[in-house]
Image 1: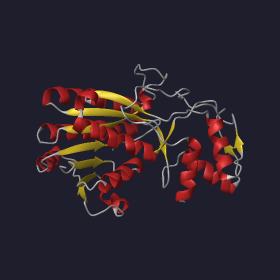
Image 2 (image 1 turned 180 degrees about the vertical axis):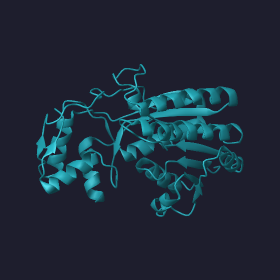
Image 3 (image 1 turned 90 degrees about the horizontal axis):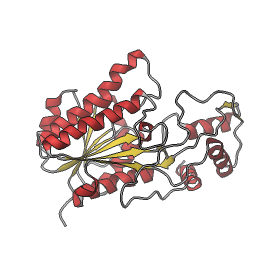
Length: 301
């Protein structure tokens, strides 16, 4: 059996990216980690030695030189700047992170033997839950814009690209200030937690299922690219309970109450009430239900 191609990972210092980098190392692959912040290297110290870290200087030339030295590889593009809302001062970093850097990756691929890319999109590209493009935020709009840029490179330079639109991820070791971190804090402190009315549905995806989707997309790009190249797929859970139901399940599993004040604040502007369900990646299915996923987090702690 021939060895698996090298993996080039952006966003490995993030929550999903770090889990993916570890899984790729477990496959015995050479893994190149593109890191834009030298201070972030400490977050990658737990990875095996075949994970090679490259500090980016922001230039396209550096990426071209790096990619030319890799005879066969696939890019896992997870790096992005997430902003639920933005200020005028955040427009430039948002474009730089979500469009400029990705376009530099594509240019390097066009000039090297590296021709396969798995891109990370978001269900926020579909505010109303349909397949039509209705971005929730400027962040979501940058994700759509990158897909359009990638389509040019795919056509002009024979790149094979698949887009995975992820649901909201969670899991053990998540450092982000997201729902379960918030619930754990308020369960411990007893301080009331002001929430919206809580009727919006949640598409919570365990990080292990997200990683499995990236690995499946990689397999398909290598073995049957005609099935997936140039297409976007949904990576989402089977069930999408309401926020109130999620909190109730969390409290039941953890065995403690959270003092939630429902309707103490309004829904956010452009709230997603019914998350998009698109076509799923062929051969991939989530394995974690919400209760099992929460228990897995507790076991890891």
